[in-house]
Length: 208
Length: 269
Image 1 (cartoon, rainbow over the protein chains, first blue to last red):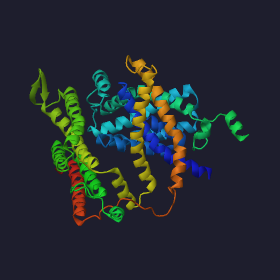
Image 2: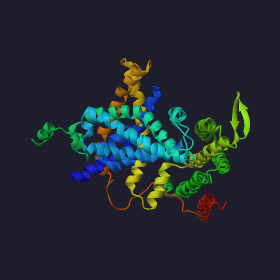
Image 3: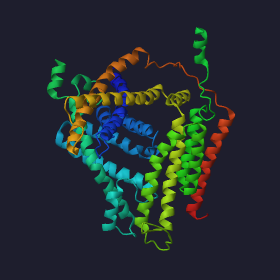
């Protein structure tokens, strides 16, 4: 029964996660900051509710952003992968402490780098993309690239995507850490992965 | 009068426009098939043709202004950046023929055509999907999907997400104004602006999350989790025969594009 209720609550959290992804981006635009922060909702829902809800938040976010920019649909697997990674890391208790949380931004930036590069690579005819990463990728290619070695080109694309994603994901993950800390125990206990964030003292108090 | 009002809910959803009145799944099939075909063919000619079809559909459905605004936001940076990047990358490719000069910068044919192929297939894809999304109510699409057996939870997630975005945008504006009123600076250097981000997002998110529980109870009280059949206040028109034909043509275009690409890859074309 408790598990069923947790599942129900999860479905109601998914739209909130999607809206948070949008609002993060909107506030960033209002404050004119040079980052995206458009996966906070995916990571929080993934961390609290598990991989599938995280994947759904990522997918729905990209479907809805594609209403005005359909090319965003191509990047849906990226946002979905963040949901899976968030759930896995959450189960391992990574988001409970600040330093491991901060280090986990490397994992998210790596996912962004590899999957992002794969998508861009495929979209642009197995060549460099024309997004913001081009600013990093082109000088790297001019310095180290060789026209004969195609794999090196792809490797440079991964590095470019990783470097562009690292700052964004570090801030995203810090925001998520503080938000996860701010949830009341009463609410956390009702979510599938919520108990991970309840300390032993709080658990003992609840049992009493 | 009251009876007339009550029976109006039995009428089919009508918008008074041939394209808008089509079944959302038929329209989706056509848009997705043509969009994927554009990705597979990967030629600027196909992308331009799709873009023309999309633009004509936008004019017919009277969404041209909104459509062109969104399309230009995608198309202009894509065309400019892709062509500049490819010129920088492949200016010294063997067999390159000069085509024109921009402010003393010589442009060549091969990188130019390659960049046009990429940019236009994405623009073509975006064009047909923009027309689809701008002419289709999400509630109609979800109703059509539910009629085909998709769970009502999926409808709730999509429709509630759209509503949550609208609600949260309103509260983000209110909270940002309130934070400004109590002295938090939202202008200035990047660190000052970054500091304003946390006190704005935090309250929105926490209040939205904590409200979920009440929402879950309220929805359960309205039989949200009931396993039986649901009733609807909207009725979609049965799909006419010509919509099936249009869908079949779109599928044929997709199959044709796959065959074209396979033959090109194996060297038959």
